[in-house]
Length: 308
Ligand code: GLV
Image (cartoon, rainbow, N blue to C red; front, side):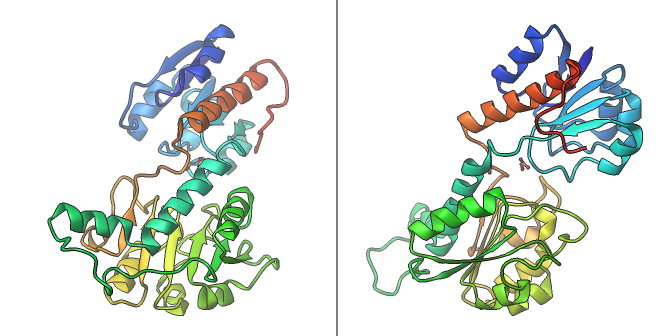
């Protein structure tokens, strides 16, 4: 069976595919393939290991024709699941193994934005540090602050555990329409930090829009390690510029790798290049999990992380 891997992955994952005798092609990257190049590259491949940067639609599935998509990520918003269902294509993802790494990064961003770590670094580098000042770069105390977690799945819960260790009061709201946790509007209005951990779906697209931002405290901090389009970036930039929101930290963007130009000029936003799961151990586990799912399908077994 021929398999296309759309980016170089940890060698542990590749080794599993090779050991099973599959005919593996790895796109060298680092830039993702254009949709046309992806359709061309997948021709003759029944197996696909895909990344969040690939748009996997019906045309890509037909070009193979692909029978199994093993996504090397937990989020699946880049895969047209209906198109997969309609064609009987099996789709898997990599849940669990990236929970802690992503929660760690959410805390890193939360701390960085709350305590002006990156703005302070810029100040020092440009020679602006003139010594300790009682009023300089004051930030948010985490102890006693309320953290509102939006999307209380594996990663949201892992962030809650970490935040509790910092003395934060943790509240959450579930998916829109779900009745667990606080109503979303109450969470927005009462939280000192809001951290997003929901998947990107039609229901969560621009969940944090101008109206949602207007409900937040002007002293609040927004952290997004979920998916860029959950936040209306233009509205966020306007709120940050106008001082209607104290700070934000973003690991994901609406049109990656493009960052809204208004955000680039602001000192009160921390920008990270989609690093949530980027640790050695986690990326190795993700590569292994994607390969294991694909190999289960090839061996006629149920892939452990089958979504479709
Ligand atoms: C990465 O963003 C993932 O969904 O795993």
